[in-house]
Each structure stands twice: as C-alpha cells, then as structure tokens.
Length: 99
Image 1 (cartoon, one colour):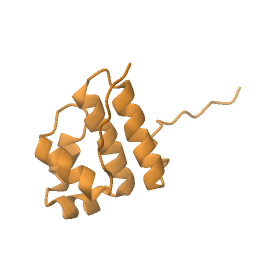
Image 2 (cartoon, rainbow, N blue to C red):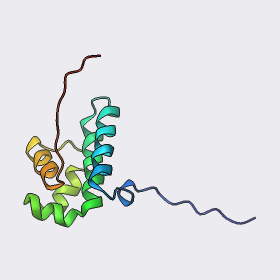
Image 3 (spheres, rainbow, N blue to C red):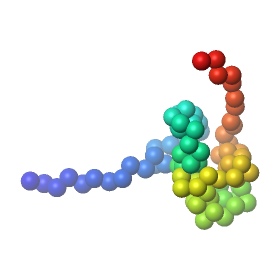
Image 4 (cartoon, rainbow, N blue to C red):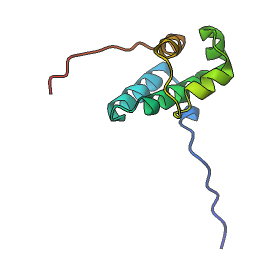
C-alpha cells in the first residue's frame, strides 16, 4: 500500500488577483461571526499573498509586527488594520443591513 502525502492548505498561495483577495476578505467578514481575530487572520493571508515584506515597507510596520498582528491570535489596532487595507489596495465599504 502506498502512503498518501498530505500537506497543509495555504490560501495565500491561491490568492492571485486583487479581485480574489477582495472576495476572500468579504467572505471572511461575512462568515466571521463578529470574530475580529478571524478577520485579521484573513487580512494576514492576503498580506502574505501580496508579500509581507512589501506590505511592511508600505505600512511602515515591521514584518514581525505584521505577522503577529495578522496571525489570528491577536486583534490588530484600527490604525494597523487601515494601513494594511490601504497597502493591499483594498477598500472597506458599508451598506445598510436590510435583513
């Protein structure tokens, strides 16, 4: 019997376009159940896909700080969140919840 090789799935390897990144973040926000750490992890996945060094340079934050803030184990400050969103060339919008 041959052995089956299983590897961890890394969404960052599959987020190639800004449209895919935006759709992923929207879906994570929708499914977050108001879990800010979950949303920050999704933002970290997108930052990793874009290149954490590049995001660090554009935000003025260290790579280490970004990895920690966007790990899903912490909730980043609003300032960090806004800087990362801007560096990722994404925009957060709102609409009324008519449900």
